[in-house]
Amino acid sequence: MAELWPGQGGPAIDYISGPPPELWQREQPRGLVILGATGSIGRNALAVVEAKPDFFRVWGLACARNVERLAAQAQRHRPPFLAVLDEAAAEELATLLPAGYRPRILVGREGYAQLAALSEASTVLSAQVGAAGLAGTLAAALAGKVVCLANKESLVLAGGLVRDICARTGAVILPVDSEHNAIFQCLAGRGQEVANLVLTASGGPFRGKSAAELRRVTVEQALKHPNWRMGAKISIDSATLMNKGLEVAEAFHLYGVPSERIRVLVHPRSVVHSLVELADGSMLAQMGPADMRMAIAHCLLWPHCAPVGVPPLDLVAAGPLSFHEPDLEAFPCLGLARKALARRGGLCVVMNAANEAAVELFLQGNCGFADIPRLIGAALEAHAATAPGQGPFCPPVATPAEADSLALEREVHTLVERIERLDHHSRALVRELAHGAGRQPA
Image (tube, rainbow, N blue to C red; front, side, top):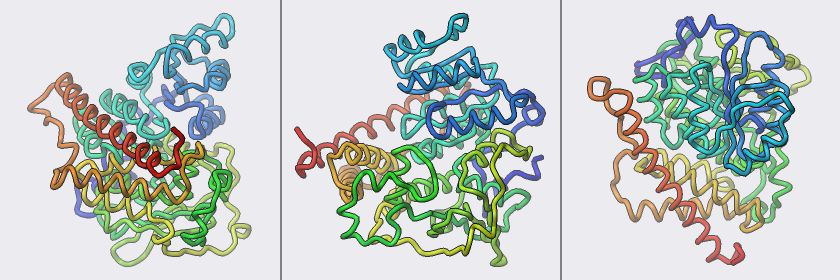
């Protein structure tokens, strides 16, 4: 099935990893670990598992603190391993599990990493929200797993590092994000004929609103996405268009495509999930219902295509399909993300951390919707002023001739520590800036 894989090492497309080995493609049932099992992606993934029960064996499920939902999932699928954020959550989880079922409960980041590297599981779905998902993605990649990647921040923060690890360990990345999964499908069987990648955006709940109108929106309004059912953080990112900014960075690392060849178009109906423009000017589009089970199933079942309970797209009911340029004046987050990607030097880490901190403040009622891009921009400027001319934040890891697996893990650990320090500093700066503006209570 290598012919279905996007081009590697070419001038137009240089995909982040090679294809899964034939043994994995034939494996049944596939051993599966889900990081972020209680979130929207994790729940949809388990729906796919239930639609194809003979195809999977769930070895591990992880969440942060939603232990009641995790307990219900564990009771249904009976994985031998579970993981939660801390000891308090582990103790509560243990009391919720039924008699006669005693899985091993792992704790904290080390527990997530241990779960991601389980020898019994060939496949890891990385679906934790935000920067917290990086550790699990890296652990799975270091273990040479097939990583179904829903945590876009893993590539935003450390895309070059993930690419290098895949080259060293043979790990595989399959993109779960609907937009990147669409591009991945459009690239199947294509080599180096690609001119541009086109990411589509619904425009969120505030499409067409002016910058002045956006200053008055509420949390409740921002959480009401017109097409997709998502968690709070990604819903806000969609409303600000930061989600598209993160996806531009994700595409840069996934496909090895310069950012100027990654376009974003607003497509309100979310029927066309993304497009690939070929060298002759023609375009390939992937279309389907706004249901994440399709993209998840494409990755978990790859290279097989099978129904998982999603009704087919009704083209008549879908109505006219329109496309528009994004309004960068009203929604500056997309431009801020492009600026961070262009300048590198840790700015993508700062941008992501500042966005996560600002979104949290907004959800808590401690800053306004329009303050989100303002705080991100201020954090980027502060970092650029203190670290002028800094080179790529994550240099390549050691080559195979220079390092064994332990040395590779040590170097990855060092780079992750640098990312975390910058992440923590940027979050603190955003909270300080918001407090200084009088929006955050003392």
